[in-house]
Image (cartoon, rainbow, N blue to C red; front, side, top):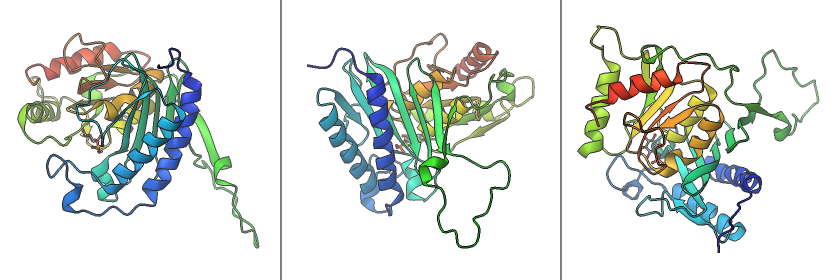
Length: 314
Ligand code: IPD
């Protein structure tokens, strides 16, 4: 029987270490394009590394938490989440980037209970940026510190740098605190993704939304400052949590793409809402999300403006 009171701190600490282990599998792999890298179509890719990482993560989780469920990108058939305590895993979020050696990728692991994500870990092993959050305890970035002034050079004969871990620092998100107010959609930097469905309803929704956001509105001014498509839903959520992006919208991604980022965004003061007006509490497997950064003001106005821009596209 499932543990009725999951220990979120214990889960968080285990997932943190597991993500680092998965990261070293990813950085040491050499992905190559071959016909077996395709899933549904030529823009939906999977590599042997995605499968090997998911295997390693799921067997480690089964050994440590045998009564909890598992929902993984490479093994799930429906993508649906149940109320049981569940690990939600995307072994490589940004597989297309990975195949092209573009280092904007992450491993994303969430823990959800009663269909609510409560722990989130997102790790980009190429930049060594690890984002992590537990519901109610804040969101953090643990990463190599970037020197702000010239670091001292090693003197003649010195061969060792500081051990890698001592160079890491833990920073609370958002990076700017207090988070500056949102100035409205017209002045926003927004991430929006092409995803891997290139036909059907979701494709129509996406192309209409791209076009309505990228072009001018009825007053002749542009609808947003600009759009970005970086290729990892989980890292997009983390960029919103950091405060680097004002919002992120996607139609057609899955619980494993956003489950971990969801906790990180909410713990950094941001909001995850659905695609329709008034959908303040979307489900994690709802496949259409709007994510807005934490701000001292203007958050709800931004959500309403965005919902207005989506009208007629869904
Ligand atoms: C994809 C990425 C991409 C998003 C897609 C996802 P994957 O995940 O997050 O940014 O647009 O919807 O499926 O397939 O690389 O794990």
